[in-house]
Every structure is written in C-alpha cells, then in structure tokens.
Image 1 (cartoon, rainbow, N blue to C red):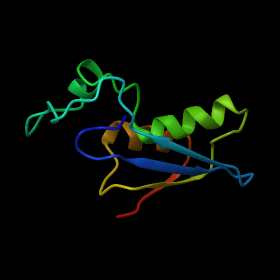
Image 2: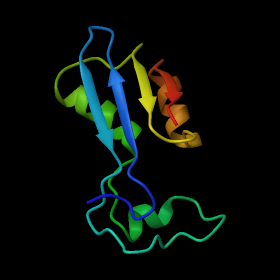
Image 3: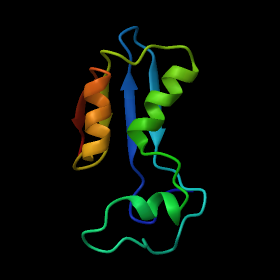
Image 4: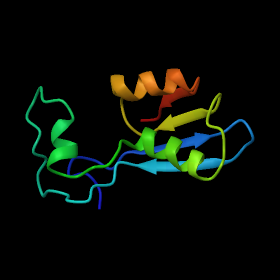
Length: 100
C-alpha cells in the first residue's frame, strides 16, 4: 500500500534506455500521516515501515536488474525531491526533474 499523504512515483531511464519505476510504498500504511508539520521523514520509516523513497526504489530496481543507473534521467511525480534523495541523484550523476 502507499503513503497516506500521497503516492509518489519516480521513473528512472538509464543511459541504455531501460526504465525502472519506484514508489514510496509502505508496509504498515496509516489512515492519517503521523508526521507533524516540520517533522522529517523518520516516522515514514519507523511507523509506516516505508523501506525507501520512490527515487531510491527506482535506483535499487535498476541495480537489481543489472543496469547501471549512473548518468540516467529521473522524473519524480511530486513537487520536490528531498535533500537526501537529491544527494543520491547527484552521487549517481542522475538528472532529476519533478513532474507536477
């Protein structure tokens, strides 16, 4: 199941043209989001059991399939990319764009 707030998808296209779609799926989704204004994403992991953000999921899927995510392009269906995911995209030299 997905996050109580919003389902976020991240679509990674690797340099070789393969496509991987990640989501912010939760193992213990809540009816209402437990995060309060100003909270970071810790409750997503500790309460909702969200294993990873959509961006991380897409990269993980590419790696599991044997594809190199470096230099790819990622579209994230949300208004922003969190600082941790942005740092990950930079480390992999992935061009990340938000699609609203």
